[in-house]
Length: 361
Figure 1 (cartoon, one colour):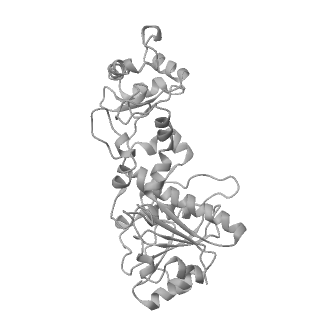
Figure 2 (cartoon, rainbow, N blue to C red):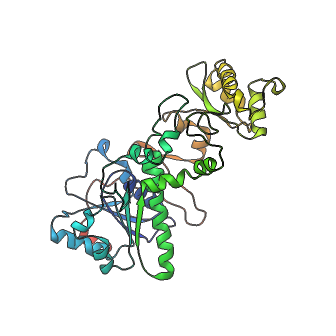
Figure 3 (tube, rainbow, N blue to C red):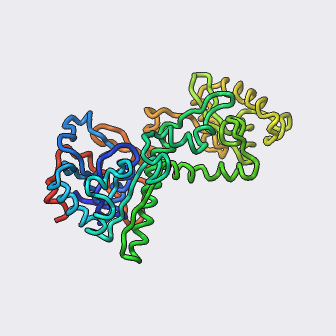
């Protein structure tokens, strides 16, 4: 499998799992890393409709990690790798004879990357959980939702992928940079709860300044502000409004044909509910596409809310080639982009296993 991109030459062993570990591996593979997934036999779907696209761009080897002979083969593979990615609960890898102490003795340069929800230690370290649980204890879930309504899970993008896979990648790349001077690998403890807290840095800073309330739907970025919200249009679709800066807000009012001289000041929070009512009535007077045409090319920061089905046809997304098709499935192109070491189109997920004895020999 030819690999291109800034991480070409980096070898990674990924232990099959769910969620942020595989997602991180997908993004690293997109950047050119040579990644081999270790999984149980008989887990590769032959039907393309059942293929897990989050496994794109990697080879798969099959191993029974309860069999000492197969564990020995995996250890040999790890001896030639740069990075290990695992997402089991704390202690599982150690019980299989593949813990950091054993592996680092075989390969002192290996970056041992561990992805969990709660981290390697702490009262909840061995507890089960999902994205919604990790973000609930950080205050983040409580902050997402409308005034007077219950919290809304933001898909699984904040805990799993934002606080999880992206911080796992950050840790891996940081450890690889450090290894270039020390010559030594280390363990990366990436916890979704930690990453979620890091992502919410701005809200904690706002709160420290006294400008963020724990009440939902009354703050600048949580739909409290009339100029940072979504509005229904006459055809039952929606527009997204993010006109925070005064000059952008002025363009919003211009597009809505509202005279600023007759309106309260933008930051008069006591009038935000009244302004939201006014904006709601205005946006209901035209279709989504009519409003999109009015605001197109302006700096009002107003845009149509597209569905997943509509996004591929968006002029900007199409022009950049930001979405591609693999196995007939629309998905993201490698991101970000590089001037000197461009990435290749990802290979479709493997439909057969590779002999573990032939990898990196």
